[in-house]
Structure formats: structure tokens, C-alpha cells
Image (cartoon, rainbow over all chains, first blue to last red; front, side, top):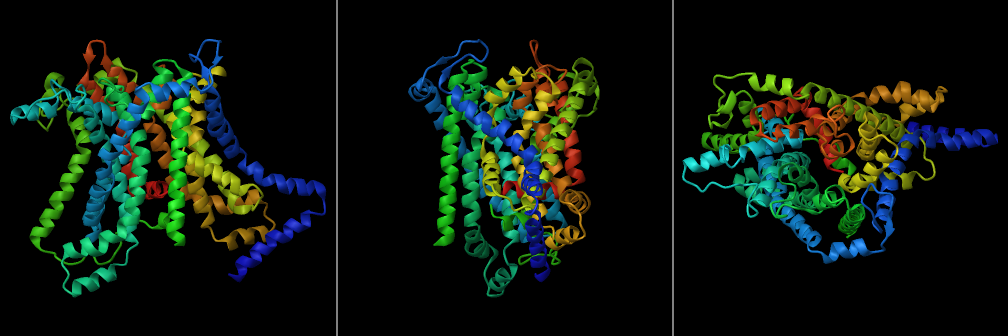
Amino acid sequence: MTTLEAGASTFEARGHATKRAPAAVVRARLTPWAYQAPLLIALVVWVYGPLVFTAVLSVLDWDLTSPDKTFVGVDNYRQLVEEPEFPRALARTGLYVLALLPFATVLPMALAIMLWKRPGKASDRYRSLLFMPVVLAPVATAVTWRFILDPLGGVVNSTFGAVGLPEQDWLGNPDTAIWAISLITASRFVALNILLYGAALAALDRRAFDAARVDGATEWEITRHLVVPQLVGTTALLAFLCAVFAGQWTFTNIAVLTQGGPANSTDNVYYRLYAYAFTFFEAGTGAAAAVLIVVVLTALFGLSTLVRRRRVTS
Amino acid sequence: MSRRDGRSVPDSSVPDGRGPGGGGGAAAVTRHTVLALAAFAMLFPLLWALSGSFKPGTDVYSSSPFPLPGTLENYRYALREFPIGRLLLNTFVTAIGVTALHLVAGVLAAWSFVRFAHRGQGVLLAAVTVALVVPPQTLIIPHFLMITEVGLRDTFVGLVVPQLSHCALAVLLLREHTRSIPPTLIAAASLDGASPFETLRHIVLPLLRPALGAVGIVVFITTWNEYLWPSLAAPSPEHTTIQMGLQLFETSEGPEHGPMLAAAMLATVPVIVAYLLASRRIADAFLQAGLR
């Protein structure tokens, strides 16, 4: 580590040396920002600027194209809260989170533990297969599902028909569509979370489990009482990420397969935002929805950071 | 979300290939059955699309798992009647463009974060981290208005450049990798009189090459799969991407499922090939991305 310190003090020495010439000082101050420039421009122009722009749009009544924009104050927000669509979309976003939660936690945990218990070539192969849904194009998968669930020629209905189960218009029936969309989105969560549980498991010390085994514990007991308790932190994190990403990951499937329908039964807040702006051309209402989403997400992330900090300190 | 977690990678190099306990035949059979069933269930759409894409005509609706006798008719039809080739090229160019922008911005910023302890760095880092959690859907309205305003709607520039809004991930991943370069190496270059840029070019970049590859592949795949932004920014077939093109098969005369499945396969194969070539590294990169 002495060389490291020497290196650090060399940086400082150079910094002091430059202080003698003002032009060089300015240059030294500006150099880091020159490297940061592309990132800074990207953030200002494409993230934070647009967020401010969205906030401004949210108090206007505007159809995206015409020259007249009217200032309407909080009317757009009032519309979101008072009309039934947005609160319902919010509730459905919660329903998606609940439907996807087992696919984000229990199922990938069980599969990851199975893979971890017997490391080797076979497990590696399963691992790469099970991860694939993460890289597959969501639209290609969605249009394939439309074909699979086709009410007339789809393989699900022809199989159901063959064994005497009731055939359904899975994506066209308000009672089944939201579950169909959830199930279609589920494989992505399972796939990614197997990997994340795998990382948590790889950090565990196998010797503790070997000791328990020598003491006569069964595999099930070891899993239940020694392994699973150590995955609680990971599970909490993945449940939180599921709450945040369920809405975003169902978006593509909703946009491609149901456009929020039938009878708004598959709508969520992200699709609602999109529909306000690009189906109904109410830029202000869409922007107000975006602002609400960002505020809620920021609060969620802030809360989770606080909780994690308290867990670390206490 | 901690940095240390990000480093740990599913460990399969444990020498003890037999693994602990049990070992009984019945247990192994159960295990393989469960895992194989899980893999089959998760990849079922892919397998069904693959099989269906080779079934001729209305055979596409048959429940037979194997397309016998198989035909390339759907592929020929999709490529002849729809601009699939063009769309694939568009998607490739777009993905390469976005990846290049992300890597350039990412490397320069990462190097600045690690090499200079300048004022305002903490704020900037916080701004990057917050940008990571802003959902892309909440930015589409302003992005759409901005590119329309400057006349870049339905151009490659308008399609590619706003996707810099997702660059936070590349920046943070590359910063982690740059930080793991031994400081003594950087200090030594500095002592030898190398400028920060020379150090970046001759010392840091060569060491970052594997990380650039992994991050680049993740950005490439994400951009290749992107749907929402291309649908708004570049709706015309001259500029749009293959994900948008898959919607073309919902024609007024009803869906053309066979050719659609063929096109879906063509949209998927490049990503699968990229994945199979470097599945371990891609999984690792996603792992680090997912833990953030």
C-alpha cells in the first residue's frame, strides 16, 4: 500500500505545482469536466432537462401539435385523481406486482438453490438456458404468445379442447387478460432472479453446510434452516425490484398484445401515461402522470435506502 | 446493490463436481426433471416460434411439435413481402450507434471519476445513480417533442441520440471496472510523464477491453430489443427497427402467423448468437447491472 500512497501524493504534488501558473490552474480544473462533458450533456439534455420539461408540460393543456397551449394549473393532476382511469391503472399496477412476486422470489430461489447444490457442467448448461428469456426480444416473444394464445388456432386452446378444458379468448377476456400478461412477463423475472440468487448463494460458505450434513441434517433441513434464512436480504431486494419493474416490464406486452384492453383490464400506469400522450394527444395529462410516477418511485427508492441504512447501522 | 455483491459471480468452478449429499438416482432424476421442465416452460415461446416458422401454410396451426416436412416458405415470404432485411439492417445500425455512444461517454466519465477527485464529483455521481431509476416511459413525451421540434423525427440521429438517456448503467459499470485497475499502474504512468489522456489510451483502455465488450453487448442487446422509442421516433420502414416491423404482420386481412414467426426468429437469432458466443460474460454483465 505504500506505493499506492506514494502515487496519491504524486497526484497532489502535481496539483500544487500547477497552482503557480493561473492558466494551468484553470486547465487543471477544467480537465475533469472535459472528460465528463459527454455524460453531462447526455444527462442534462436527455434526462434532467426532459424531467423539467415534463413538469412544465404537466400544467398545460396541449395536444402535442397545435400552437396553442393553455396554462391550466393543477387541472391535469386533478383530472388524474378524480377520473377513474388513473387510480384503476395504479391498482392494476399493484396487481401486476402481486402476480409477479412469486416469479421474482420463490420460484427463482428454488431453482437457484437446485443449481447451487450440485455445481458442475450440467448446472452451467441449465443456467445458460434459464437465463435466455432476459436477452430475448420482448416484442418477438409477445407476438409469439399472441399466436400461442390465439383463440381459434392457438396451441393452448387446441390442447385445452383436446383434454376437455374450456377454451378461452385469453387476451380478449377481461377476466383472463391481466393474468395472461403477467404470466408472459414472468419468465423474464424468473430468469434474471435465478442469476441474482445464484450470486448470493455463491457468496455463502459451503463448509457450514457440510458440517451440518456430517451432523446428520437432511438436505431439506439444510435448505430450510440454513440456506433460505441467508437469502432473506436478497429476497427483500428482489421483491422491491419486482415492485418497481413489474409495471415497466409488462409495458411492452401490454402495448403489443392488448393496448390496455379489453375494457382497460390490462392497463397499468405506464401504459396509461403513453395512452394519454400518444393515443388521446393530451400531452399535459400524460406529463402529469409521468410526474406522479417519478415522485412515487423517488419516494420508494428513498425509503428503501433509508431502510437499508438503518439495517446496516443498527 | 453493494459493490462487493456485484463482483461475486455464480460459482461453478468448485472442484467438487459431485456436490454435497444425497447423490441417489431418484433425487438426481427429480432434479433434472424439474430443471428441464423449468427451462422448457421458460423457452416454450421461442421453441414454438422456431417450430412454427418452418411449418408450411395453415400447418402453422397444427399442434404437432415438429415441422415435418419443414419449409423455408415463411422466411422467403417474410423477406419478399416485408422489408425485413432493411429493418434488420436499421436495427443493427441503431444498436451499434447507441452502443458506441454509451461506451464513449461511459469510458470518458469513468476515467474522470477515477483519475480526478474534482469538486462536484459526488453530485454528478448521485445524478447518474438517480438517472438509472428514471423509467424510460416517463421520458418519452419530452423526447418525442424535442426531436420533432428540431426536425429529427424519423431519422437515425433522432432514433439513436436520445437513447443516451439510458447511459447511466454503462457509466456506473465502467466506473467500477476502472476503479479495480491497480492505482499503482496509473500512478506509474503519471510519474513517467504521461498525460491523463495518454494514460487512458495506453494503460486503462487495454485493461478495460473485456469490460467494454461485456457492457457493449448488454447495451447492444437492450437497444436491439427496444420497442417503445423506435415506435415513436422512427415509425417509417426506412428508419424503424425490426421490433416495430413485427407489428406489420397484423395486416388488414388478418394476421399472417407463419411469416410473422419467421420474422420473429430473424429478430431473435442475432441476439441468441451473441448470447451463445459469450453467455457467461453476458450473464456476468447483467448480474452487475441487476445488482445496481
